[in-house]
Length: 313
Image 1 (cartoon, rainbow, N blue to C red):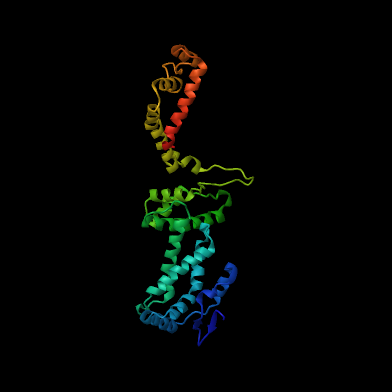
Image 2: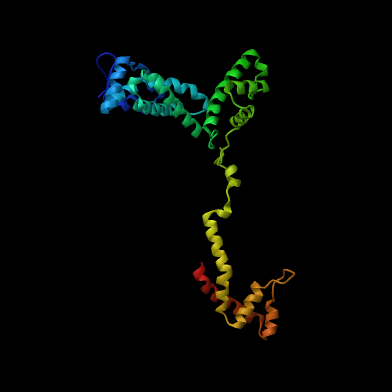
């Protein structure tokens, strides 16, 4: 089944509107197909718009959308300087076009091409603001307006400067250009400088990933991460705290007095000079046994404590 079949005049009967998009994501073929679609006359446009508005006829809405796909392609070309894929810009513009068709009133005395322009640009603007930077460049409505106007006017200034004198061509605005732009856009000079600074900032990857030779590379994510508040680390820290307080106390309580003193002297006691407690020979002399016997008592006590600490593991 073919995607498009001709009907009377320039009207189109669409069996499957999405079949218009060529296979394998060929953008050039899509643009060529969109530009070949006949444009509707005023009478046809009003007829389809009324039919969709009054009866919800999706076929009529599809004809309105398809006949204006070339408009989306044309508008999207104006935003190629942001480094975003042309196909994505067209896709977002098509979303705006469909929103315009849904809200279009043919009795207002305006053509769909004029009405849809706002919706197409608005959708593309929103897409650019969300994806041009990982952190949004513009946040308020006024800043968004300045963002797009500043970029377009700056490109015009630089084109004029390059034509006049390529040797003095600069990437940043001069003081005179800042004043001129502030007057033309009716904003404060400081606002132009701030947005110019934000636009001039380069993108930095938080996690660059491995290098070409397979070695790990380090980005801001390496020093921005707070390991102290990482969930696994916090759980482990709480377990260590329990082990060092409740666990050790309960484990020591399972030992007899001699075994407990030997463990405390050998492992838990720290003197003022940061030295440890008593040695095996010192404890052996105190209890009147051999150093080997003290070591055996220590090993047995440690095994008993380990068993008592199993519930805290």
